[in-house]
Image 1: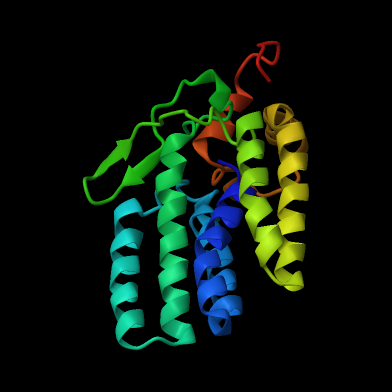
Image 2 (image 1 turned 120 degrees about the vertical axis):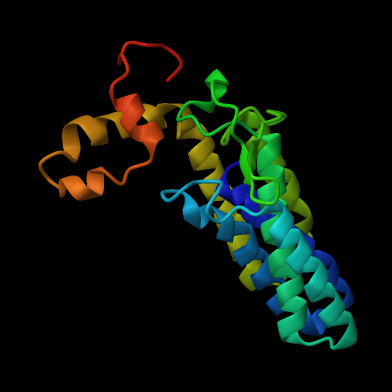
Length: 216
């Protein structure tokens, strides 16, 4: 799923804290936002493996919850929400597509790496691909309760997330063409070869595909 969906879901997990314990609202919402984004920082370094831990984050969220019950504070409450949001990101990605550059082709059976079992979890494709219409609909659905209940500073985050989500969804199927042009025409000779060698495999492999193939 696309990053705005994850960010909004992370903040939504913080909403009960914001409503029931308003003194921790800002910390909880910020932690939910960061936790929702955190796993996707591995986008260009072992995506959905390096920072995606469906089991690990869940265990950390459980430990943090115990700490928050024993000693509630901004730090412990923030930790609970951050790890819960990161866990939800890692788990929810299983419901989407695989790692291929064109996930609507459903050619890759890797959704998220399960470090605990040492294997990839297969994609369910309930949301066909990141940026699909149903992904955008999910983002809007997550944004509505947040918009109604969060303070103005976080409302701006919600609004910005929806703007990014709409833009990404509108351009998603054109992005592989852009990536191919960058890898084959724009970047070679302009950036060091060592940097090009660090591109994810899906970009390099796609550069050799027939540009006339449909579905882009």
